[in-house]
Length: 355
Image (cartoon, rainbow, N blue to C red; front, side, top):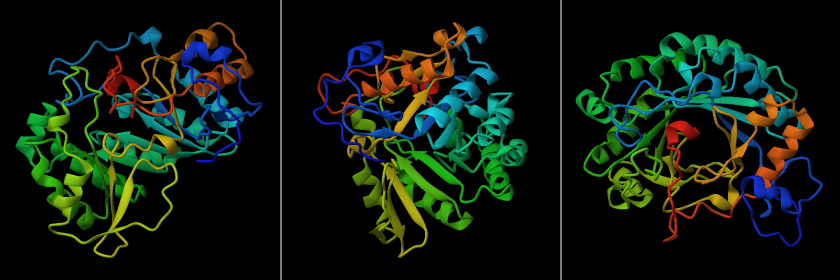
């Protein structure tokens, strides 16, 4: 993250109201608190082939109609605007499950052809990596994060409502074979569900050369059933890991990275914890988000969005799209407010926002 001198900040505003806010003559995605967004999270679909209990109901969700989804060309155009005009340097493709997007390799290829070439990554459940890892690497994919909440087949079935653990493990191997090492694993621990697997999961990661990241469960489920009491905290995760491993603070500069990391038994292996709830890192946030239907979200937990699809399809120029994006980010709030009594969960669940 790079801070810019903005003087006395205006009151933060969100979405379309940001048009009225004074803003410095800076081409980048600055906000009124001095943060600069250089990391773009692109949701390429809201669809998923799992039904994780902490994300959506067993019957799934109503998916976006096809005409509301951005086309491949529209996605690429907005990514180009972000890279060439707004200073974005990293693109992470998310979902739903991004491997369900038929044109993903082509979108990646067009993205990595941009100048300057952005770093690219993907967050996936891993189920289709066995056949797609190599083609995605050939298209320019630099890194992958795979969600793995359990190593137990029966527990995986209960958590995801699908019997696909073997497919995930096969996908992990394919990702490594395709050169995506180090593969990063994302794990959400839930009390009474899989909170006894912190140590086995880290042992598994160390054995295979993966980098494990534990993520505190966040209020982003479609059912709005998140309960702080069932969330396993960063402190609890670290205490559990410390019964088996020696953890020391990672001396590397964290910057805007969401994970706080520790060296395992002296290193070089690391383990991370993304403590969005108990140790919020909003002050260093460098992310901007584009949904599959063309909405800009300046925060994962924002309750309003700024539309780019309408102007894009209405004939807006790249410069006009860039200006709308800048104004959307200028209105970003200082923090997500989860720990404030007035906090309200976003209407959209994580599967429709993108990670």
